[in-house]
Length: 295
Image (tube, rainbow, N blue to C red; front, side, top):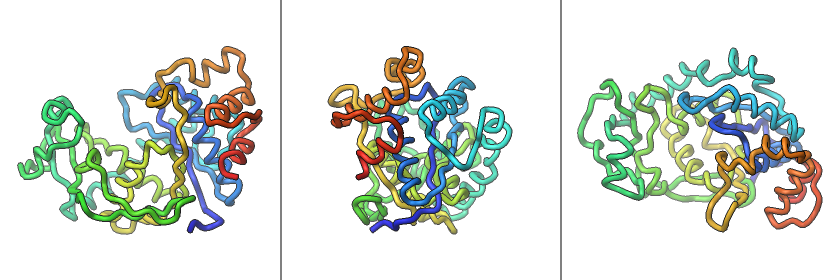
């Protein structure tokens, strides 16, 4: 079962759009769990997708956390501090070291497939293994690096509320990308490297990211010295727009910025989240939401 005390957890938004109420749910639960387990909270802004990052979206992260009164102890305190010290571009050598470890271990192969090519062959998006045996040199310009993966290897994840869960890597995560065609590390690798670097031992994320959790735990077994396999994960329910579609950042009506401009207070937004989860009561802050969902 999980320990009663943790060292550090993290809030890790991607500034590719204005944050929505689903993000607030995740951030609030992270802060609530930190408060009850003695963990500090790191703000880590995942900004390696350079084509989608905008300064306004980064600033929105700080605006949202301040409006919702969600505290953090470590990481950027404002936009300037983020830009000059905490952007992931400052940790590129860390990610390159991890990529070199994978290369030295023979765990990666080069792939020149485009997403369109993959979808033509596999409309479900599952990588068809096109380049696994092509032996394309890893230093070829414009190739991604994919991980050699197993369909049957058991992956053990220590979860906050279900103990040890053992599963295998899902089809969509087979041969997942660890270095993009632009040479930047992919999300899964950067996330593991960052959690190791900052000493994170509690990860809170939505149920839709279970496959990412499995991929990251799989990856950690291939990185000498990684402690990520010992982290504990808590996967929370999602807020849904409809029965089968989760809230997205593009859904302007649910962005915190839009709600705030329309006159909603933090308590209004917390209550909206609680009601969307089936709780018929007023919630005034992140601790109240945490008490509802965590007991």
